[in-house]
Image (cartoon, rainbow over all chains, first blue to last red; front, side):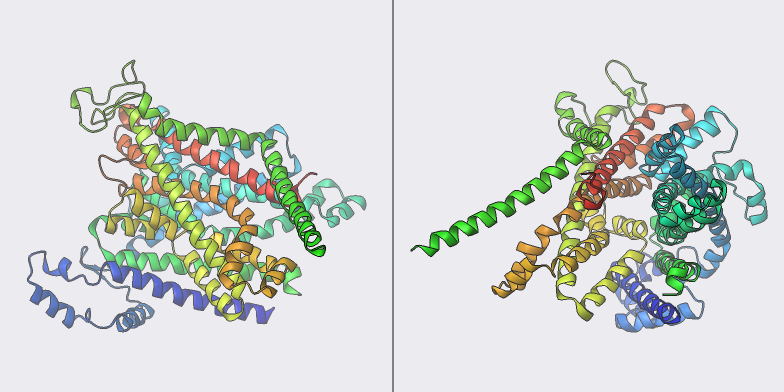
Length: 315
Length: 303
């Protein structure tokens, strides 16, 4: 097992290096230097050239990449000329809010999807299963923003229960307490994930229900409740760990759209604003952070699975 | 003279038998597909939307070029079946126009992704060894790139047209077909007919194009529909965030985001019909994809 974990870790490091090279090269190719943003559109070419030279933007790409990575490892994510702030400071201001929104949505999604999927597998083809399957199918094909709009229309306009704008407070404690403003964004992100997870959980539970150890458990007279609790839930939930790791890119994209729709001051909205301002240092840092998060998420999921599943652990 | 016709005859039988087997395999898959009610409904919905978006404007003629502010934001009526938007464009005609873009980008992006992915996976699987594992690490790298972020950055920088969005979306969604085809090729290349072709001196390119890809076609076809669905969703995201196609072109996400500012005014016709179009199209494609996967998966076959 240790050998496998070390190999897996090695692959992840290679992938992180590869993805950082790729994203850096891509953004460098479309935006070589922030000189124009700093010096203005009317600055003469000679000024631009000397600024580039002074700030290292005419060095070979390899040198620039290594310098960027070196700064990154020392906690410097670059400088946003559009905001006149370090990217790190911009991120620090907002990261907690994004982590809260995505984290709580992920938590709710798992808490809802796991029992729902198991229920659907046990009562397969019942009315409840069919309703849940249809709902999952519709949600699964629905863009996040349209789901958010429907929720706004129903729960903020037709029946004004919740606010259609997310909490604007800068204090996370206030944001967490403001259920009136936070319910709809959290519900939007949660429902999209529930759709994907419950579909998967249902088929995974059906696979487990067909296994011999379930038959044995039933044959030895174990009450159905214990069969489900001891044998089904644990075994069927294992693949969910991998699925959560794999669904991180979806969660990041969902986060971006949800924050834009509900005007929630998190990292996704920062990315969206930076797109409009062509603020590439922010775009580069956030895309890179997203990629690293995806790699690390998959690594953690694999490791957790290895430790949790004796079939892998003892192999 | 005598042995030759016999040989030819035997060949003919062998070939005929093989072709027959392949055909019946496909026919079986088709029957399986047709027996799946959701798949047939999904196929019907896709056909409907193709006709609605491409033939519809020929029947339901609307002016989508010059604004008409006197008629702006009109509710549905006899002359405008789904009302008008804030520029006075007929909303139903606008949905048809947006659907053209969505379907064109969806299918073209899927084509790009499948082409890159199939060739990439076939080469990786056929060559094998360190080359294969290097290529697969590259796939891992591309799988870790946050898809929507990169698509948005490129769409903003290079402008969004049907062609550019298709290429960008296709260029970042070939990883799954590459993995699928590689897996198929790894198992197919150990079969006897590939060995026979190799022994007969077939070149590597011939092996890929005539033997490996056609046999790996099943997994590719299944993946196409999911690719189209995902691409249509991706375009709607780009459009919704305001970085989609430019006037006079329009896409579904773009229309929806235009409608949002009137949500509180109750102009439902600007939001919900176009949203329903996105959901229905994507859902229909997912139905077809699921059914194709079940139909081509021998393990799931009932007979």
